[in-house]
Length: 441
Ligand SMILES: Cc1cc2nc3c(=O)[nH]c(=O)nc-3n(C[C@H](O)[C@H](O)[C@H](O)COP(=O)(O)OP(=O)(O)OC[C@H]3O[C@@H](n4cnc5c(N)ncnc54)[C@H](O)[C@@H]3O)c2cc1C
Image (cartoon, rainbow, N blue to C red; front, side, top):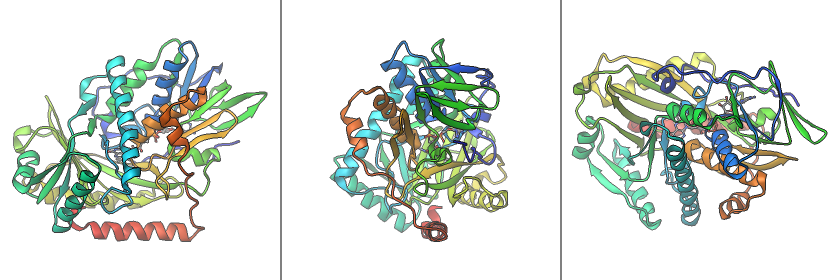
């Protein structure tokens, strides 16, 4: 079966671009036979490789990625590994209490697994910091969202702390926010450093990672899967598909996956003294369609990152003509929050593909004989991708766990309405939601 589309993300992967250059993993340039093939080296693919190497310590594992490790969505996100429910399609991120309790348990299992990789593989501590996050509110409506969210968290038995405008300013250096809701369980990633480091440390004489090696075709014959790349091929009895929305490009979950892009801008490094507040923090918006903002600092100074806007892209690529308007929104959001930094230039601007399902479930399970899917992370791929990868590995080796049983019991991604209703509906929903977000954007 020929793969129909390949990853295309606009702009540079900023988190990768600000790191020192690294040794390349190299592309696949031979025909190989292995015990396990993993397609995709994002959160899901790397977690699957790690879990397989624990469960089958003498097996050979090969990972292929179309892009360089750290340049795909796993290295392009805002780096918030959130333990709490984070349903982007809801008005306050929450849902049904018992479903949310299960989501929290799954998210925390993924964070614990990532923490274990950090410790066992020696990932630099600055790549993974459990410091919590704030839900920032800039309007009366945002404050109300936070109040409702806090009540929902209380029902779930989860701690949170309300912050007033002064406390928000003391943290962020910005007078923009009326208040915030702090929750302690979020991990802040330097996402490119995290995936680059995990990938590098996983490599051994048993685990091989090839980058810039897109799988062009995948077929099964004589009990083996054959993955064809440009300059080589891999044969394996079992394959884990960890390509997020591109599961559809491999012929799976057709008309069941929602493809959206979201976008980030990162300032150049500036003298940390120019902005009061703490050196490192991250906040999500009180309205799910508002702006996520982060500050990161190191010996070279501070940088601010703004992430906002979602566009619906059923063809999994963005027309560059849209980008100018999106960067303008970033600049407006940035200026409103940090007027004293007027003149500070954005050094990097980028976008990345993420995948949702209408019923907020993953595209998970054995989709063909020996072919396991760990795809569709519903916007929270740092945790849900990690979990999907771990669980796909467990399922593929026949290792039973309560969490796997729970994941297998979830519904399949719901079918999208027919075209043009799906596209018109999604675009109208996003436009309406972004208008409703108001000053939270
Ligand atoms: C700007 C932005 C901000 C975000 N912020 C957050 C956040 O703060 N927190 C959070 O949890 N999530 C966030 N996300 C979402 C998160 O990045 C994704 O959900 C996550 O990366 C999904 O992980 P994954 O491993 O499933 O898929 P991906 O990271 O998309 O990895 C899939 C890999 O498969 C590879 N691939 C695809 N097709 C092929 C092929 N034919 N052959 C070989 N390889 C192939 C791709 O190159 C890619 O590297 C954000 C996303 C963006 C774009």
